[in-house]
Length: 162
Image (cartoon, rainbow, N blue to C red; front, side):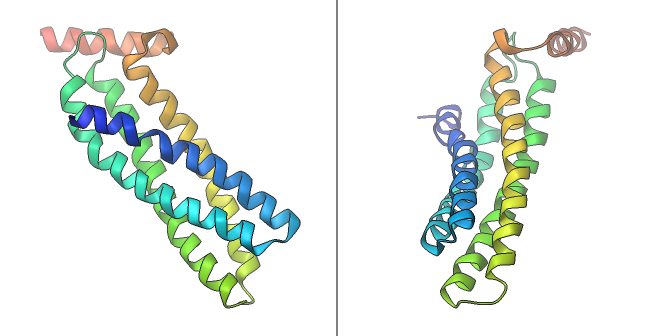
């Protein structure tokens, strides 16, 4: 198994995890159930760990595909930039989630505030996850690329020939 394969295995979980976690946390806040909120926090922590694995396998995957004729270095760079922003938001969400679990268990007065902070960060994470997933899919799935992306690939190929 190579880095590209490992990247493909782990890169979906941060996207799916932040989406599911947001839904679970929102539900926990609405029904005022600490167990449901802690479930979301636990999912966010696991999501942050998988984000680290995704970032860690990304460079190896890049090295394997960047010189393929339909890929181009620029499209990978765009994906990498968005993925790094997503990873940072998920790391922050993981830290907030650890605090959230602790505050919930200790019945701290700021537990509710932490829930709302986590929801805001998770919403940002969902937005970045969508952008990351789309840009990652565009690397090998040429059928979902827009015209601008195709022009970028053409320019990359032209530069490589010069």
